[in-house]
Amino acid sequence: MRSSLIGKIDKAKRYAQEPGRVTLSNLTADFHGENANHKISYAEGKWRCSCDFFSQWETCSHVMALQLMLANELPKEALASPLTDQSLEK
Image (cartoon, rainbow, N blue to C red):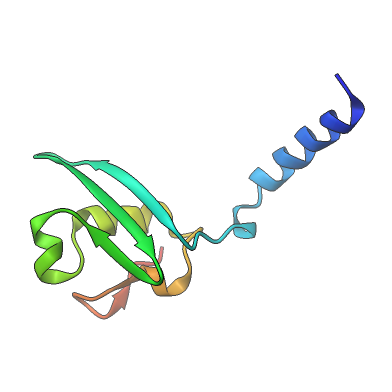
């Protein structure tokens, strides 16, 4: 294996130990809920989910679950919940 590639692999391993280096600005995901699958996205500072609850409340359990799972990689504004005006930060 080339030494330059070995160096890149080592660097990638170091980066992976420092998740604070990454902030997600756009995201799309398929969420497998209890009753159905849903499309979730975060773009231009707004969440979207294909579930019925989201269309009325602008948040849902699917979005909140992703906020909790990705709290360290999302920008602070992506962690706010319109239902409570509170952050879901850990």
